[in-house]
Image (cartoon, rainbow, N blue to C red; front, side, top):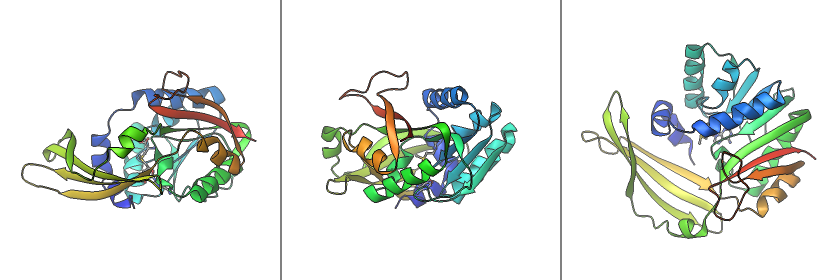
Length: 248
Ligand SMILES: C[S@@+](CC[C@H](N)C(=O)[O-])C[C@H]1O[C@@H](n2cnc3c(N)ncnc32)[C@H](O)[C@@H]1O
């Protein structure tokens, strides 16, 4: 239910330009491991292109042809070689293994059913070379924040689009507790073009206790769970769950 959101790949990059520490974390982890790298839900290549530019063989898989088209354009601009593939991370077969596999920026949370997550982890397991690592980051759900989603449309942020000018971003969200999914609608507007994008975005929560169980169901073992990008320990109020896993 989030595909339409990713049809606007160029706007996505303008809306979410940050993530410097995440780029550094994944680049350093890939370098440490050495060898080939696969990113699932690679989007426009924000994390993967810098790794490829560093000389490691890289592959990126994403469901959205629009995000992949922008990734291809950016990689060519930077002179980085990446093998891009359109596919669904819930079940994929690239026919070879990798030394480092990662899923960045909550992309895993587009998989809403526990079965989908386990199926994705099984596919990841099949793509891990001996000694490989699998890393991902998802937000650490706060029940207080989740419960405060009241369906009311509010302005969340704004950004500058060189073509359109000032773009404001409104979001209306509700939390579907039994599904563990926050169901949102995002509205992008300029002064002259109100709501030129209206797109649903639905994001699951993975709670701390279920995370290792889901991984285990897919044949993976959680080695480390950090609570922030510098690698601080995971705690109740950590912003993220930054996980490093191995086959097992
Ligand atoms: C939040 S964006 C993150 C993009 C990129 N990893 C980054 O860090 O900027 C989520 C990405 O996951 C992709 N995605 C969503 N569901 C997917 C699925 N089932 N299989 C593969 N990619 C998927 C979307 O198309 C989108 O590009």
